[in-house]
Length: 84
Image 1 (cartoon, rainbow, N blue to C red):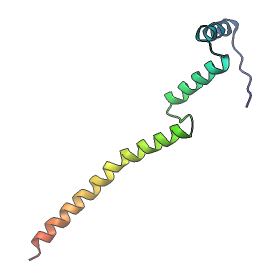
Image 2: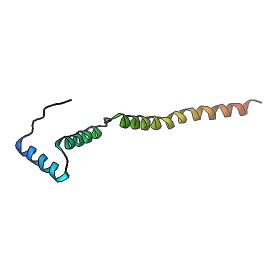
Image 3: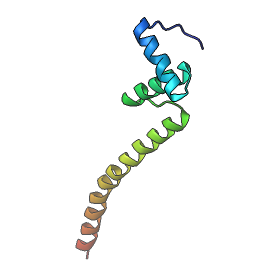
Image 4: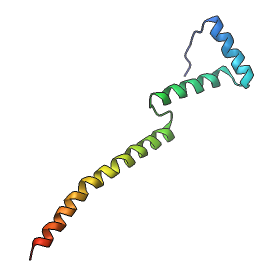
């Protein structure tokens, strides 16, 4: 996809110089900048990133589910001890 982005002259000159210093194209600088912006706001950049985020959310939810079930199990064990 192609989009047109307008920069003021001073910003364009600084981006060109940064590109020369880092031996990178303007496109590579833009890709890095947009990836950093998406990361800052917690938006996955690609499928791999989305899967990592999903796995972290799943792992974070796991202990809560186990904690909810543990008291019920302990309560059931107490009730079994009273049945004689």
